[in-house]
Image (cartoon, rainbow, N blue to C red; front, side, top):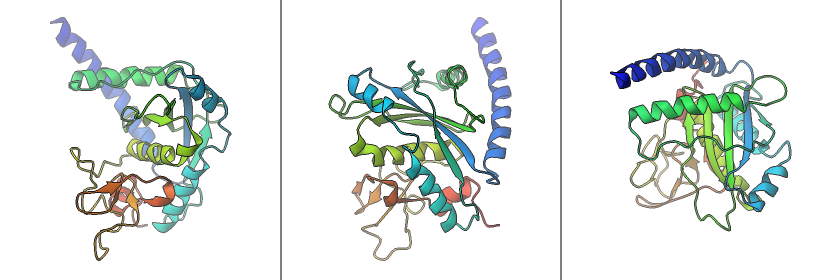
Length: 256
């Protein structure tokens, strides 16, 4: 009985929050004004290397993301010069709640609410309130060969991104951040979960290319550059990625 009541209360809270988030997202993807995106850097592993990297991030550390969205908006004939405005927020010392690795629906709902509450408590950004909040945890690559999977929450317009604390991987970090940013705007993954290979045709940057392989670019929600039917490479920078037609439609970049 208590569990059923707890679930009912949680669903009621989630429904209220989801409605507010839907209204916020609808305004955000109208693309009448620049989408305000705040990136909150966090020392993800407590290492000196990650601390130094986070503290050394300049205000224009993620300018490549703004350029990418501007170039892709122009390619999709959106007629908006600056679709995304990125702000680097003050570093956060606290660690966000981690998503359940193999949780059920209830666990995922509970984490979503915890993440929203945590984000609200750590939302210290000067100026106008951001529409999308991306919390980026940086890890020392000398200690970590890989980082946990990143998550973008559309209903909350919040992203939890795991990245490497090295300038040599700033380009690939920007790809992951942009991928999760697109998730918060309604874009879906376009790769096969088991193999991580881009799904044809929506996960291909140039699905009409002949011959089909090798592709020159990655569709950003496809995640990789298809080289053969069974092999794909991770893009090193946003210059190697594009926003495909299906992804553009999902974020409201349709014909006007």
